[in-house]
Length: 441
Image (cartoon, rainbow, N blue to C red; front, top):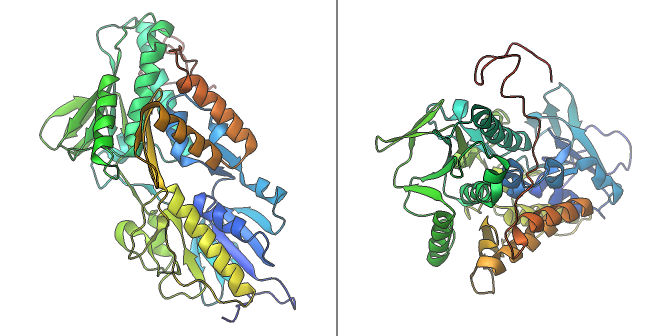
């Protein structure tokens, strides 16, 4: 394929590869081009890579936000042909080989890789976007954590033992199950010691799942284990009804019942960002970009899409492993094109298995080539796999230490939650919940 110079006038200039998105797929693509004679520009709205599978640990005060984020510019420490640019994609001109960013600037490209991920899908549920808290970004995870501890502090200041904190989690996939289990462990391992002003069972956790099963991608006996493990930890499971509407302090179900909710956590699904519709690319289910077998965007010879944003006939699962494998595949194919070598035809995903943690030394894991695992063995396997998927050595060390301290010990310990800035329950005599009049930090 002839390369489009993308506005480069310098004879012999290296081909330019622009990668949109610094998640699993984007970083894998960049790394696959490490030894290729190209100039890579990585564009992301954030200056960090975020390890999304452990965000729920940030939301439940188990990890620092810095434990699961990695400075994207640090990729240059081991890869000199990559540059980082903070920005948001606004448009694509595939014929001219340029992408336009929200700030009005543009970048030339010979190859473009769209790996910008997806966002929370509220499925049009009234009130969900306004009142529920998603757990797909670092800031969202911190808002959940702060909301929980703010409610606890306000209850403690009132000495209120009559009305508990009600947390409702919507969605019975891995994120919902892991969030419910982590919150239950946070409560059960000793919050009642830290908060003597409130009752032991002050925090009530309810998980709402439209179907009758948790963790659908897992084997039936692993789903059963997860259900029993959550129930053992005091999580209320509500099956068979979806969410009809979310109110400020209440979740209305499709069966007509309502549940009081002080904090609603939405873990029910994802979809493409709305701005994808403005890029002139073909879209399929959930607004995702339609790609062919080799991950090229349909109708575009030098534009690829990988990770959660891409959809093809194989309908790959929206998980870390498919994203990383597809990113490496596309990066290597671009390197082959640059070198004038034939590319590999179709991407083939190797399913290495999937895991989900439930709580202290409790998890489910189905790993390719091994028997299905539950309990402590599955938990340690989950911890090792997730820690080694983190990008930085400091991230791995800090995360492993925090996880082992919180969950991995054979004896029960009281947690020391990693918390943020919680404003006083009473500010200059204002009652909790009343409108604030001060703007100080």
